Amino acid sequence: MVVLGIETSCDDTAASVLARRADGTLEVLSSVVSSQIDLHARYGGVVPEVASRAHIDRIIPVLAEAMREAHVQRGDLDAIAATIGPGLVGSLLVGVSAAKALSLVWGVPFVGVNHLEGHLFAPLLEEQDVAFPLLVLLVSGGHTMLLGMFGPGDYRLMGRTLDDAAGEAFDKVARYLGLGYPGGPVIDRLATEGDLSAIAFPRSMLHDGLDFSFSGLKTSVVNYVRRHPEVAATDVAASFQEAAVDVLVHKARLAASQIGAVGMSLAGGVAANTRLRARWAAAAKADGRRAHLPSLAYCTDNAAMVAAAGLWRLAELGPTPLDCGVDPNLSLAALL
Ligand code: KG4
Ligand code: ZN
Image (tube, rainbow, N blue to C red):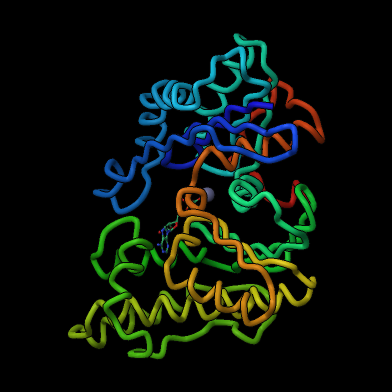
């Protein structure tokens, strides 16, 4: 089976060709991502209209490159999978329209994929022997969730943020400190030179179930910097990051023990965070669980994860009808 995946839910135009061998192993033949960060950075965040127009310019070259790199022709494809939500409506429409058009013209089945389910497939792209149940922490710019994954398609939502997503907190703190967009990578870098115990930022809801809250942490960083304008940005970055990572890791361990998880996996853009990855590996080791840390390229938005989720959906549920629309608010609940 060879699947072409397409991902355009936010500000990355991505296409990938993924193969499933006869023995069930997955092989990413190509994964092309054209980032629009340069276009949005000056606005301090993603501008939806700018994003949709950039997707239109880039989708065909990105698709062509993914096919070329994978050395496949249209006749080699068994399916075309595209993210149908959640995301920005204009952005989603570009990828889904391209996928449907190719599906019709090439006579290949179309599969609509939930972007969040795509992120859950990231650990399966590189490791062939993932055992379940798996505890997955999905942390991105739009989502922060703890999920029990009992197998592909079999999920239990265990906790989620009640306000800001973790990545949103990184982005907002960075914006307040004048560090640019996206904030996560900059804070990650600065934090390596700072003292993580310099400032005692709050660990919101630490002993309060499996849900998260990050808006109080963000406000306390802003208030602290206002009162101490001379503070080193490196110390603020390291202390803020530690407070966020503390809560994420603490609750993930709790959730993992509740489901008797064999392994713990990170997914989503914030999973690229160096400190979170180090603490995650240490926590898993201490608890006798296997740590799954997908490569950075499969943590942030990419189309290989969409192709993998699409492949599985196609096998279980068959193709998606071509009159299916996009859903900017598609939730994971649709899959539970
Ligand atoms: O999954 P993703 O690429 O897009 C969404 O679906 O949201 O995640 C983007 C988010 C942004 O908030 C970005 O600041 C954050 O992931 N991020 C990071 C790091 N790299 C990206 N956050 C913390 N540390 C990083 N190294
Ligand atoms: Zn994402």
